[in-house]
Length: 146
Image (cartoon, rainbow, N blue to C red; front, side):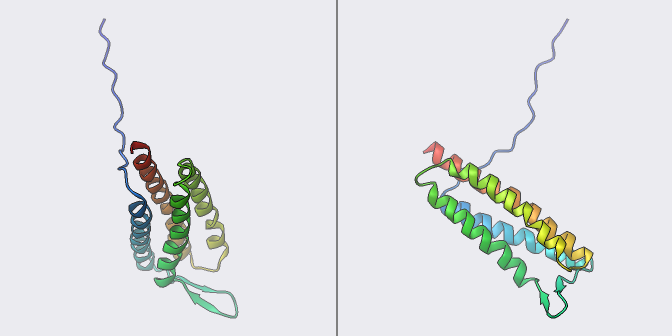
């Protein structure tokens, strides 16, 4: 009787990164990824225009850049600064940031975008979750290893 050796699944290694790289790298990655999604959504026929009856608002590409960068920059900067006192805040920030990112999809769905725009904007929200988690875990790893 032979026993097969135990195999382990390959794991993804998150690199340790310092505070500026965790924050600015995540913001740059999010903006880049969301612009790619915007281009795909526009190619699929999305107008990224919301009409509320009295005014028309175009959210692309400037709105995509601003709404990707500003909330992420504020949240990640706050977490990075708070991590000087408590490293555990980085895990809290990963959860809270991810939940808020996913919860705001409801606003996108409720708005009067066309289907392609709604789908693309919702995907942008979902893609922010791994950006948040990887940046906060990379920073946490850096701080724990010091």
